[in-house]
Length: 460
Ligand SMILES: Cc1cc2nc3c(=O)[nH]c(=O)nc-3n(C[C@H](O)[C@H](O)[C@H](O)COP(=O)(O)OP(=O)(O)OC[C@H]3O[C@@H](n4cnc5c(N)ncnc54)[C@H](O)[C@@H]3O)c2cc1C
Ligand SMILES: NC(=O)c1ccc[n+]([C@@H]2O[C@H](COP(=O)([O-])OP(=O)(O)OC[C@H]3O[C@@H](n4cnc5c(N)ncnc54)[C@H](O)[C@@H]3O)[C@@H](O)[C@H]2O)c1
Image 1 (tube, rainbow, N blue to C red):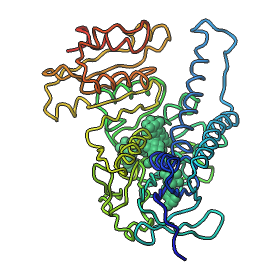
Image 2 (image 1 turned 180 degrees about the horizontal axis):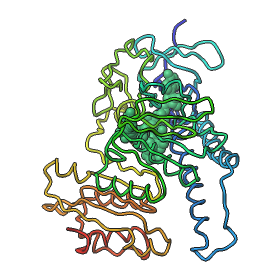
Image 3 (image 1 turned 120 degrees about the vertical axis):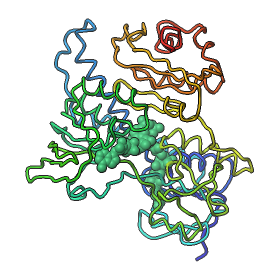
Image 4 (image 1 turned 30 degrees about the vertical axis):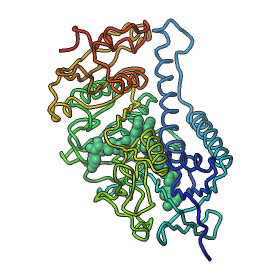
């Protein structure tokens, strides 16, 4: 049977792919999108949205425990009800998934639920969810298959019935203790959240500091906050062997000869691109040495008419980066030449207090040859932090001494995920740091703290 040919075939309904599919279908193009089951993609189903919903509950619990400090009595013994917690998370996710399905169908796209595999040039065969197969080809094809948790070959790990960032969302009971293997973004967010929920947490991290991509002083401030809140950190060590005893307890042997035991284990050792088994060689798409789809700065793969976007294309692993990939693809499919080069991609790590990041770290700025000034300020200096009783954290910014432009910032505090967007806009607008320092900013807000940070008191 001849494959059905469409103007656009999207393989994997991630942020970039689904946005493009809806957009072009609504504009009248023939579009098919193949998705193997997670309507709306990773972010909505098993990543950003459920985790941040849970983080919100964990923070609320923390605030309620401090109620008396804020002059409120009657909330002395708040507790997590895991069933209600899961129900709220499922409600938030379910509502968003339902909304997505509606939008997909309203756009006029052909939504194909099943597993796609390339069988020829720009052509996939789909093993349909309901049984049977369908073959579809596209004049243009976008690969947006994302990433999945990786389980490295650590002795015993595969047989230890471990939790990943996906399975942990289905927990029926909160364990009394948890070892979190990996101190990157996922490990740090879960460690922080579980600890607030009353789980005794130990983080095992190979690197000498948490959040390996951050400056050592920023990571040290995170480590200090974690330790103060009762999280145990085992830094600079690797897990060498993992076993789960008959009573369910997990035992981990470490490279320094130490051991850690806990009721459960979360593995957060990074994610791997979904490219194996996709049959990409059948359509002439090459991979990078690490298994990502190789793309140029316009998101073109090595095969004519085949594009890739999001995590699988090696874009920064954030939903907003994939969303920006959509904009680039949309322009380039129409003959434009938008590029991923030099784009400013901020992010926030939703630990408590949270870390907002944009631009260069101090280490990166110095390595790039900038003549650097560093601003560093305890969050307790910000009036708003006093009124909300959130004094933990430190803000840093890196300023170019020659141009007075802000090169980057790391804000560890309450509301840092919001304030970092202000810094991003300052950077995008090319404002000098003095223009922020001397502007009129609403009092008392956390954003106002940027003026203090960039004043003589804190800028070296
Ligand atoms: C626990 C966790 C928390 C996170 N928190 C945040 C956060 O707070 N903020 C943030 O910006 N980012 C966060 N991220 C990262 C973010 O989730 C990803 O960067 C983003 O979802 C990547 O989207 P994407 O467009 O690459 O594709 P994805 O959303 O990953 O979509 C890929 C889709 O392809 C489908 N697929 C794969 N193979 C096939 C196939 N063969 N056939 C058909 N369909 C297929 C999959 O089912 C999936 O739906 C988090 C990630 C994790 C794991
Ligand atoms: N808020 C957000 O935007 C957010 C939240 C979660 C995840 N994400 C995205 O998801 C991606 C994946 O997150 P992740 O945390 O799984 O990966 P990661 O790469 O950030 O962290 C993995 C960590 O595991 C450590 N590690 C590796 N092997 C080890 C070993 N054998 N023993 C001990 N430690 C070891 C590494 O040193 C690293 O710190 C991130 O890069 C991020 O872009 C984003």
